Each structure stands twice: as C-alpha cells, then as structure tokens.
Length: 107
Image: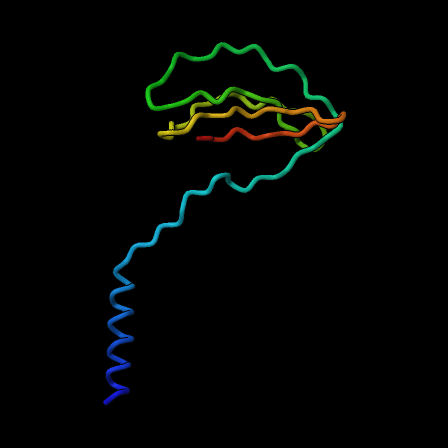
C-alpha cells in the first residue's frame, strides 16, 4: 500500500511539473569571438544615415577584421528592444593593441 502511494505521489508531481513553463533568462551578451590586433582600423566612412524608422535603431557601419585586413561592413537596421539602447560596434585602443567590441544592446 505504501509503495502505491509513493508511486501515485511521484506521478502526480511529474504531472504538475510538466504543466509548468520554464523560460531561460535572456542572455546578456551572445557568445562572440574576441578580436585583438596590432593594426589600427581605418577611419570610419562618412555615410548618410537614413531617416529614423519606427521600431528600429540604426546600427552604423564599421571596420571588421577578416584575419588579414579590415573590411567595411555597411550599417543596418536592428529591431528595437524596449528598455535597451544600441551600442554600436567599435574599436578600442589599449597599449598599442586594438580590441573590437561588437554592436550590442545594453540597459
């Protein structure tokens, strides 16, 4: 009798838990490669920024390192995220080395 009560309890627990929806918290940053090089990127290009677009943020173009040289990546629209602001892709110089920080959303 005790075994059947234990089994019934386990089955009921599984049924209750299977009805729950568990959502992973949003990731702060997507995984991305670290780029740090000795080669200074060229100056940013002068580009006409398009007129604002409702529900989107403009991600300006930037120089991307392809392993041998810098290649220009054109700007594009990214869908807005409520409560966040867009941080554009950029290069940071530190002690003669250049570190690339990809564009991302921040609170």
